[in-house]
Structure formats: C-alpha cells, structure tokens
Image: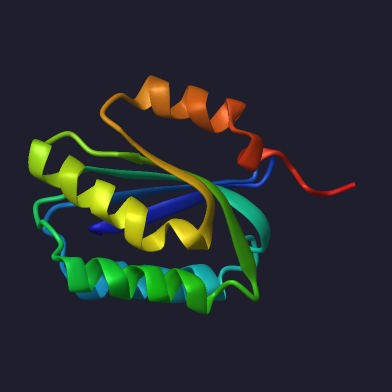
Length: 132
C-alpha cells in the first residue's frame, strides 16, 4: 500500500509513509481513512515520511491535500507536522506544502533526517498535549 499510517495514542502521533508506486488519489483517500478511524481524534501531531514516494506533487495537488486536511478538522486537530523528504525536488515541494497547508497545523517543518524530525516534534510547543 502506497500510503500507510499508524496512530500512537500514547504520544498522540500519526506516522504516515508514502511509498512507491504512489498516486494522488491514494493520498486523498488517506484522509478519508483517517476520518473513519476512531483512534484519529482530538489533537494529533504528524510525522509524514515521503522519502520513498516516487511521484512529485504539483502545487494544485498540494492545495487539494491541504483542503482534505481541513475537511476533517471537526474530528481531529493537527498539531505539529514534521515532513521527511530526501530528494531535493521533494524537499522543495514539501516546503511549498508547508506554506500552502501550514494554517491547518499548529506548526510544520520539512526535514531530511528522521532523528531531527523526531526531536523537533518532541520539543515543539505546538506538540504539547492540550488536555487538562
């Protein structure tokens, strides 16, 4: 499956990986899966790994992904989002996504290194659990 995810309910973290062969429709379907998943609720941070994705999104597709994230905000509020991207082209497109979809997340940043992404998520004020 090109888009897989798991939800760590203890850390309040969604780990999503996009792998090859990836189609845009599968990315959009991922948000429907999140909407249908009972564990996907409240405030959750996101670790998105696109290091193995073989399809570079265009800017209109990035806008559609942001709209899909916004559409499920009644069920889940996205906190911090760390994105892992290896290639220069994907890193650049994820920086565009950061600008386009940043309003749907508490904070967002693109990384090339998984350890740095994890540290940033753990230390980011937007990642703090808002529950009393």
